Amino acid sequence: MIVAATLWVATLSSPAIADTSGTGGFEGYALGDPLGQFGWMVLDVPVYGASHFDEAIVDPSPTWGTALGSRAFRVSNGVTSGGYGNQLQSPSLVDEAGETSAEDAPNSGGTRQQRFEGTLTFASAVPTAEQPGLVVSFAPDSGDGTRMSQFRIYDLPAGLEVVVVAYDRANPAFNEIVLASGLDRTQVHTMHFTMDFVDGVDNDVLTTDFGTCTSTTVGTWEDYHRDNFPDNPTKPVDSLLFRQAGAAVPANLGGGILFDDIVLSSGPTPPPPAAPGPPTPPSGLAVSGDGPAAVIAAAPATAAACAPVTTYTLTATPVGGGAPIVLTGPNPTFSLASLPPGYLYEIVLAARNEYGESLPSDPVVYSTITLAESGVAAGSQLLIAAGLVSAGAVLLLAVRRRRSHR
Image 1 (cartoon, rainbow, N blue to C red):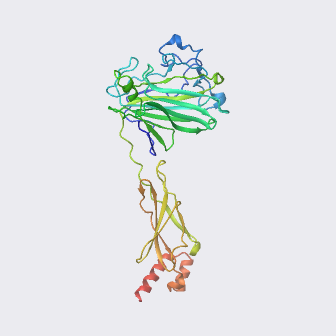
Image 2 (cartoon, rainbow, N blue to C red):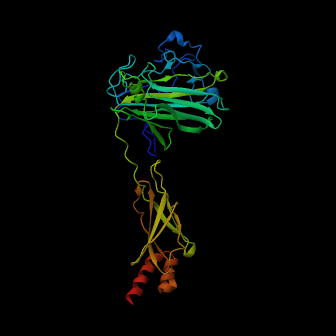
């Protein structure tokens, strides 16, 4: 089993998608039983019974306003079952995804792809309070209950929690790995996942994220099938199975989780995204004040959301030669009080993130030389005061003149 975390988030849609299912919402659905609407199905219709399971297309707007539109799919564990064929399946893709050796499934087909990808929006049907004991499950599947992973959403005192059920081949067992916890039940959340099927053993990659800079990567159930059903190596997937099992919690009837914007797709595995790279150089470098109170500041450097700037570096190099002075800090603002007096400095700023350091900013010149020290004539001081010539320019000329008299 692979378990890892990364700060680079997979893109929400892959190039060269072979097939896509779902318009993103349930707005065209009739209220009530989703079975038979736009491809929603169960294998064993007589055993399913819409009145048995606690799931339906509902209007969430009285609770959620416009956040979920006027239609969403609600499901709870108020009723559960140990079966598979009697539980709801999302519409199937034309082109399934799986390893080359994956066993053909009776309810999936098309051109075998390498990646299965999905996004879905979810929210509590009762955002004002915890629903004790609530757990709702959904799983990438091929339409016959032979799942290749499973996700669960819990309602806990601290908020909603999403886990993935992972198969540990080294110690054959299924274990829950927390993907997101403490999710505000008064907010709508979006989950994205990709399943990349790689020929071979224990090397499939399932990655999930919630629109943040952190994603979680685990394996699929490929080796559960290999280890327990030698004649049926691995399975393809083309849909989501919403299976509610375990102990039923009747108190949750009429509540549960609302799902919306379910979009599934299959296609080739794209190349990994390019690293974000270092930040842009800081801009707008300027000095305010003078003497010990002087401060130099710049507009913050820009960087990719998942690779923020961590530090800024100020480099002050004496004009005419000398060792540069280097200051670092978390912000693009520095006090110049620590610069030794009696020098003219060229100052630049650079920003750094985990991918490296930016180019330096455009330089500015700052002087810790007083006019009295420079020997600049009073007339020049008047020109500076009147704004007709810069102090830096006059001081630079003065420094050069003093050096030429040595």
